[in-house]
Amino acid sequence: MLEEMNEKCAVVGIFGHKEASKLAYFSLHALQHRGQEAAGISSSDGERLRTIKDRGLVMKVFNEQKLATLSGNSAIGHTRYSTAGDDSILDAQPVFARYDLGEMAIVHNGNLTNAKEVRDALIRKGAIFQTFMDTENLIHLIAKSEKEKLLDRIVDAVQRIEGAFSLVFLSRTKMFAMRDRNGFRPLSLGRLPNGGYIVASETCAFDLVGAQFIRDVEPGELLIFEPDKAPMSLQVFEPQPKKCIFEYVYFARPDSRVFGQSVYQMRKNMGVELAKVRPIEADMVIAVPDGGVPSAIGYAQASGIPYEMGIMRNHYIGRTFIEPTQEMRDLKVKMKLSPMTDVIKGKKIIVIDDSIVRGTTSRRIVKMLKEAGATEVHMRISSPPTTDPCFYGVDTPDKDKLIAANMTVDKICEFIEADSLAYLDENALLRSVNSTDDHYCTACFTGKYII
Ligand code: AMP
Image 1 (cartoon, helix red, strand yellow):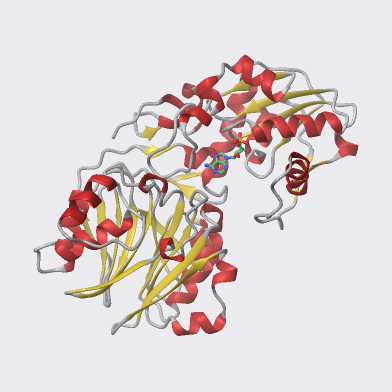
Image 2: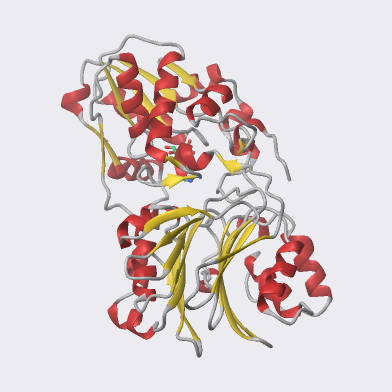
């Protein structure tokens, strides 16, 4: 259970701005794609911390009155994605606690790989947990540390955890931001337009609040924010970069710069590479929206085959409660993605998506396009076959549910009923993201786990 918590999420921290919680709120809107299950903000006015969090989208959790109660010059925020089944509001973040040094709140993106061992050891010593979140371990580790200052306690605590973590801590007067030694998940630092600083999972949050990008928080680095000072840096761990390549493939927003590069450009590059794999004659290239769009544009530019809008996405469909029968399930998919029949009818189509996980989306899309009159449907995937689950913060099903872990590409092609199917290989993907070293984690495609 523990390992399922705290999956792909977004974090933000605002320091030294009189509208801190409002800026955190706007930032969370920009980061909503990283998690739609729950959202929360903690703010500090220097005397005490206040927290509001709940299940649901940012827009649902907050309103003007609620934000007005989150006063103070500093705030941290979180949007949470997690697997179904844990619907407790306790599992929303920030995680807040009172302890001997006062009050603190923490937000976390990533997954701790030794969470169970640490938790069991804490429980044996009498600790009581309220949630299933691995982030709660940190609260206990900080509270129990023998060090005097919070900074030293944080350093103490993060030495005891392993895995993926981009963290932001808030105390009454300070803020801290930290990335694990591998820097699996992104975290960037920016300057706010009227003074103060912002840290956020993705730079699209900076653009929204008018912040200027300064730099990424480095792998293994802890940034310390104190009033009227520039952020101080402490390199807690020797950096061993293993940045998550899936951020470029699927997760991050195309208008963000992640790990120092434009997500949009990386995805276009993947499309260019994809055009070289098993080229095929077709009337048009289309994308599975929204994930496949930049790669489809890259594919079209490289191949000279026109890019068309072949599938329409309804952006207003959230989670629907209709599930039980197969007929209703198919209807649900069509509510979200529908074919542009006039564009597709009688045409040979190349359709681009970023990944195939269980294979259900691709299968439904091929069926939908054929029903709309496409004469041929050639599926192209802008990443290698997803063969292994992620333990570092991306929500993936167990290996037995990953279609590429259990079938060859030819068999998958048969299953999704496409006329052909091809993926990018690992080297082409690494080329697309300009990788010249061994600094990316590709475990979901290769099974090469480093922790
Ligand atoms: P599936 O239907 O299980 O094969 O899922 C494939 C679709 O899910 C693709 O359109 C991807 O864009 C999308 N996808 C890939 N990874 C994830 C993820 N971790 N969470 C949600 N959707 C994903």
